[in-house]
Amino acid sequence: MKLFSVFKYIKGYWGYAGLNIFFNILFSIFSVVSLALVIPFMDLLFKSSTADYLVMLDAGKPVFDPAHAVEFVKGMFNYNMAELIVHSGKAEALFFICVVVFILTLFKNLFRYLAMYFLAPIRNGVVRDLRNKLLKKSLNLPLSYYSNERKGDIMSRMTSDVQEIEWSIMQTLELIFREPLIIIISLIMMISISGYLTLYVFLFLPVAGLIVAIIGKSLKRSASRSKEILGRLFNILEETLGGLKVIKAFTGEKYVQRKFEETNETFYRESVSVYRKTDLTSPISETVVVGILMMILFIGGKMVISNDTVLSAAAFIGYFAMASQIVPPIKQITLAYNNIQKGVASEERINKILHAESDILETPTPTEIKTLLNQIEFRNVSFAYTKGDAGYVLKDINLSIPKGKTIALVGQSGSGKTTLCDMIARFYDADAGEILFDNLNIKQTSLKSLRDMLGMVSQEPVLFNDSVFNNIAFGLENISEQQVMEAAKIANAHDFIVAMPEGYMTNIGDRGAKLSGGQRQRISIARAVLKNPPVLILDEATSALDSENERLVQDALQKLMKDRTTVVIAHRLSTIINADEIVVMERGQIIERGTHKQLLDQKGTYHKLYEMQALK
Ligand code: ADP
Ligand code: MG
Image 1 (cartoon, rainbow, N blue to C red):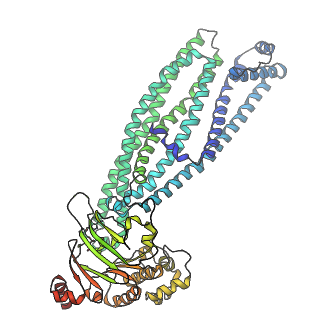
Image 2: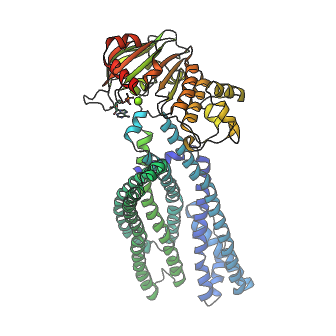
């Protein structure tokens, strides 16, 4: 049954779980026993003569017998009570009972607290572990996974679904150990008072269980729906915060607001339904259980009225007190059961991420590459983003990128240039053909060593909300300020960095929002300089810049490219005139290749493109 699957999360917390269970057991015993004291209390008030107690006293101390432990404790207590009453009087005995009940209650609550005390590290530890595991998995999943999944949905799984699991865990620990224990101990006591009456309880209890199970099933469905909608809500939120500038510029506030409100409304409706179903559990289970109790009250009361010797009035009242004691745990269990249903719905959503298959896998014995010796080569490479249809993004690409040379890719937007570069880093795997790094298929290499060979600077620099220093040293360890500064100087970034309020320690804001486009780009170039990779990929690194900035960045890039193997995608053809080979792409295929001069002489596509730009 899925119900217990939450237990695997407790792995590593068995110590705490054991302590929690131990104190829960003590708690249950103490709660039931303190209530059982009602019987001698009643006896004391209503039994008129001390003669009864003399009889008890005469019976002597009971002998311990493990099979009748309850009888023994009861006997011991009765004996001591009788002794107290006979020798010191009823008032004294009453005082004694009150003190005992108070002490029992004190311990009962101490144990309850201790049980919760040891539950806290489990609950929070499970949440911490799960979030760490989810982030680790998110970092390992290939880029293609994220083209198909919504970021907001992944975020909602990492936050609210994980929270739901926390609830499940706590509820399960209670469900499995504390509440049933109270019920079992109460039932034992009840049987010891009257087995006949308790038979009725056993007959009708399963009815309550059935009703609860039906509600639980429908609850799970609603819960999973509401979580999915929450994911969409997160998604809108994420896009809104990320695109505030555009939203304001295009005065799209109303549209975004409406989209959010609509989704939020759906979420509201689903949540209300989840709450109503959850809230239905306790009233129903209480009604059913109290119905059973009333029946017992009736049958037992009749026995007392008819002066049946089997059941004294005091014993019946004690019995009834104990029977009512099982109502709250039954309510708790039904509630817990339903919360677990919600937890299971969340668990399924989390598992979708945790069990997502990565299709970019390393071989069992990957080869570490140290440097590029000869060339990177594309051999008959074809690739499509969506498998199964004919929409190839790259088709039959043959290309060699020799060590130390600069290869330029040109072509219309959408012709597959970025895709080709991404494949060198193995962000995507070829559907046909192979990519070779010094004659070794990159599928045979270790991913880390392959990516360590590459430095990428793209049109949209990726910066983090952190200091300039940490952004430049990103991904590298043990970097000195001196090294970062040297890299920044090569990247023409040093001057503007030192002019900032806190120099290299200045925080650059979300995605580098506090910097200009050119400054952002120069920081990402400094990052590439510092990494010092043998192979460089420049994907339209200057196309988002104005000409003043472009000159500075271009100059920085020139320094970076020196002595390196470079693939450069250029928007402005003037920047690649000196490339060793220019490759012209169209709809995923290479249609022309050669040096700038050769291509101009061909008077083909490149010539046309060049003429067009020269006119500008
Ligand atoms: P370029 O860099 O030459 O402008 P791209 O390599 O970015 O071209 O894109 C080539 C084609 O692949 C385009 O038609 C684009 O629509 C498609 N494409 C790019 N990225 C993805 C993606 N993540 N999922 C699906 N299709 C994509
Ligand atoms: Mg591109």
